[in-house]
Length: 540
Image (cartoon, rainbow, N blue to C red; front, top):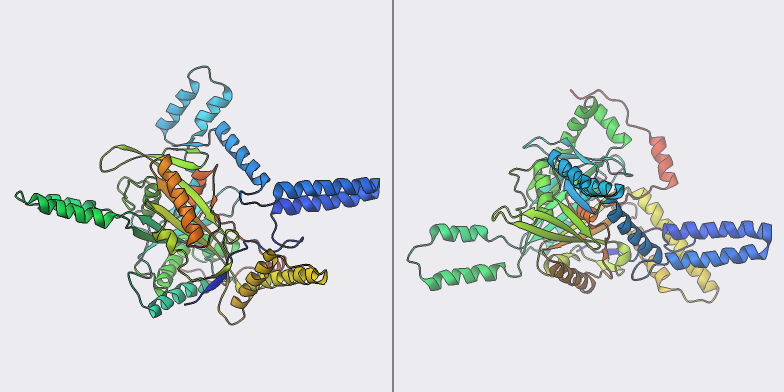
C-alpha cells in the first residue's frame, strides 16, 4: 500500500526563512526598509524605531494555538461589518420577498442604515454559491455550472455521482488497484495540456433512512400479527439504524476559463455554443476516466440534481436527490448566521413541519497536521468514528505539473538545508520546525523524481457538521475535534467562524474554497512562450 509524507507545512519558504504569513513578511520588509532610511536620515534612533516596530509586527502576526492577534482582530471586524450591513441574513430573492423586505424597511422610524440592512438580506444567491450560474441547465443533461466569484478566476464545474471504489471487505490487491487508478486519474490531468485543473472529492455521511422499511411493514402487516413479532421487527430497525451510516460520493471537476480553454472552444463553434460543445467532449472523457479509476458507477449530475444536493445539505430533512419542485436558479434557503454557525430554515417534505438546521464548517490544511507518512485511508476515522448526525467531508485538489512542483520542492530543500548549516556553524541546535520542514521537502522531492509519474498538488480539506440545536452542534464539534486529533493526526481544526454561511459552500458540489497556487516567475515565462494552441479546422 503506497503511503505519502504529508503534514507540517502548507506553504513554501519565505525570504526570511521558514514558513511565514504574508502580513508578517510585508510588515517585516516594511520595518527593514524603514530602518535603512532611518539610519541614513536620523542615525541610530531610526534603527531603534524600526526594531521596535518589527517586534510589534512579530507580536501581532505570530501564530498561536488560537491563531494570531491580527487574525482574531480580523474575525471581530468581519462579524461587526456583517451584522451592520445585514449580510448575516439571507432571504432568497423573489418579487414577493423583495416587496416584503421593502415594506419592513419602510415601517416605523428606521434609520437609513437599518433600511439598507433589511434590504441587503434579500439576495439571489446564498453566500456559499455567490457568483454561480449555469452554462447548461436543461433537464436530463449534465449540469455545467458557471462560476464568477468576486476576486477569483472564472471557471466551469461539473459534478459526477459515483458509487465508490471499495464496497465492503476487499482484498489488499483490490485496494492497491483502486489507489493506483485514482492516482493515474490525477496524473493524466496534471499536465499543462489538460484543461481540467481541479478535482473535488465529496463524501456525504448520513444516518440510514429506514422509512422504506417502515412503509413496507405498514403495507404488508397482517391484521392479526402478534404484538411481540411487530415489536421484534421494530427492535431490529432500531438496532440497525443505531450508530450506522450510509455514504454518498460525488466527484466535481473544475475547468478554469483560461486562454487555453477559450482557444480550444473556438474550434467547436462561436461563443457559448463552442463552450458547450467542448464541455460535451470533456464530460464524456471524464466519465471514461472516472470509470477507469474504478470509481464504480459514474453518472453526471444534472443542474437540478446539483441544486437538490445543495438544498439537502442545507436542510438534511430533505432527501439528497429529490429533484421534484427544484429550480436550478433557486439554490438557497432562508438562513441566518451567528458567530460560529449557519442556521437554515426549511420544511420537512414528509411531515410538512418547519425545521431548523445548524451547520458548522472546519478547514484542514497540512499546517494543522502532524508530519508523517499516511496511508490513503487516514481519513476513515472522520467518516465512521466522529459521532452521530449528518456531515460532509470535502477535499479539493489543484493539479500542479511535475516540473513546477519539482522546482518548488528543490527550492524548499535548499533553503531548509541552508538554515540547518547556518545554525550548526554557530553551534546552535536545529529547531524541530526546520527539521520537520526539511524532511517534508525531501519527501516531496523523492515523490516527484523524474520518471516516477507523479505530479504536484495543492490541496485543502473541509468538514461540515449539522445538527438541530446549539447543544447538539457544540457536542458534535467537540467529538469531531477529538476524533481528528486522536485518530487522524490533525492537531487542530480551523473553524471558519464569522462567515459560516460562505464556508458551507466549500462542501457543496460546486468546487469552492481552494486558493489556487501561484506559479513561479519561470513558470509564467514558459506559459507565455508556449502561447496558444495552433489553429485547427473547426469541428463540424
